[in-house]
Amino acid sequence: MIIVYGTFPLKDDLREDALKIMRRMAVATRSELGCISYEFYIGLSDPNTLLLFQEWESIKALHAHLETNHMDEFLRDIPAMLDGHVSTRRYEVRSTEGSSGDKQQFASKSGYETYRKIIH
Image (cartoon, rainbow, N blue to C red; front, side, top):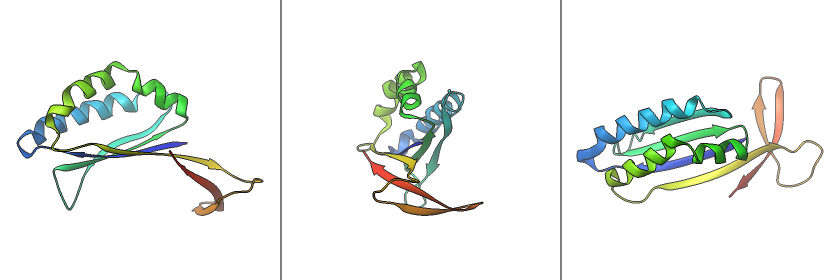
């Protein structure tokens, strides 16, 4: 699974316009093959900072998302509404059962599962 986290600092006077664009982007993206989740959140400490959290089944699905028309439109329209730089991080999460490496355990319904966190 691929997880992408990002922050979008918005200009106060363009915040509502940016929210409309982000809502359209989220709706369009959720229908894509391989999209597990895609959601923008408003920061509690700064309501003009939007957080993006997305989960993808694979890197292939994420790359396909980056080539969509709605991504082109988003990248065309959103920069004028930003009050600073967008920051993103991408993580790959995969099972490490039977392998060695930096392992972490996470609770699941069936007990504990082991995953490796890789930061790109």
